[in-house]
Length: 223
Image (tube, rainbow, N blue to C red):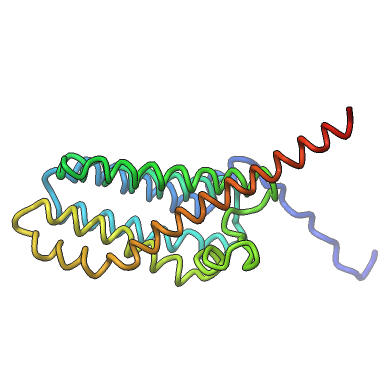
């Protein structure tokens, strides 16, 4: 009998295992908080603020858990982005009703948010096959700073949501003053986030167009 220890074969990971990864469970919890906020948004600003803030904090936690337990997954990345977009969309829908005059403005912001993130993720997966958060400094210094620094990413996203949250509180007379100051304080980083969305959209469009041009040239050479 060999004195060397027998190598224990690694347990094969199944699709069900991935579905129940710790960061993905956190993602499901975020989805639940989003749905709760949709029901409380119209009449319960305090409850909405609590569950909305909980969703933001959980957003910072899921990535940490994914790295800590080596449970990074495509499902988790997509779930994270979809939950982010859905939560913001729900709040913007309310703001459109609360401020009808500003409805088109909120609709443009919603379209920019969804379009820039979808195109950015699609371009990253289709071309490089990697995470949409892997942006080199040479490709875009601003997006590299935004995605490579977790503290920057969390802070910008937090104040972006805080700006919308401030506008939400302003829709209630009792919380108007508090909401106004939250919106004012959050405005600079909210504006940065919108600018980053524009840069992200532009970069994704250029990536896809460059790849299309490459494919077209290869087809022409093959003729």
